[in-house]
Structures are given as structure tokens and as C-alpha cells.
Length: 114
Image 1 (tube, rainbow, N blue to C red):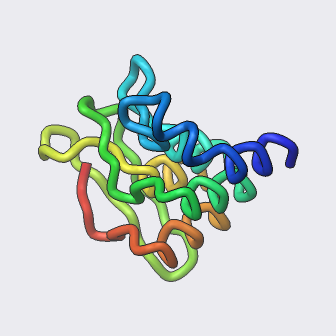
Image 2: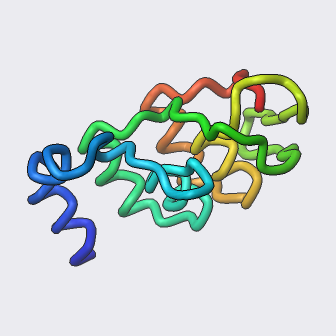
């Protein structure tokens, strides 16, 4: 929770320090929202969404096939279809239902394919 509060408090400063702000990417082209969604950390997902993180930020590489069912929404990906992996793919592939719901409420496209 301390990290979440810090992110909210310093979001404007972060944007000025990081070239891509809240959507800065790691070596695997994943954003903080990808990681928070994959681990199911809904507090951080919420903070990142409030800070303006993109729910449609896609990786530049295909990570793995993610097929699952969370709630009433079916998620799937076909390796080889352009587009990369979104935070919703990350949540779905790891079975993180609450994180997926937050992303969907924030406008993530459940039909987007990897």
C-alpha cells in the first residue's frame, strides 16, 4: 500500500522523469500494468489506471499462448497474430480475475488478440 500511495503522489513527477511515464517498459517490453495484472495486485492495478496507464499497451513480442475463461468473458490469443500482449492478456493467462475485471471496466478490449 505504501508503493500504491507513492505512485499516486508522485505520478506527475514520474511522467517527467521517465520518457514514457507510467507506461515505461522493461527489457521484455512490459509495463508496470502488465506486471501488476499478471500478479493480481489489484491495488497497484487501480493506482496505475488512475495514473493514466494504458490498458491497451501491448508488448513488442508474443509471450505465450493465453487461453482461458474468466467470469463471462472468454480470452484467447493466437501466436503469430500481430499485436503483442496486453495487461488483460497478462491477467487472463495467470487467472487473475479481479485484475481482469478492473482492466475491463477501464476499457480493455477483451477481443484483442496477441
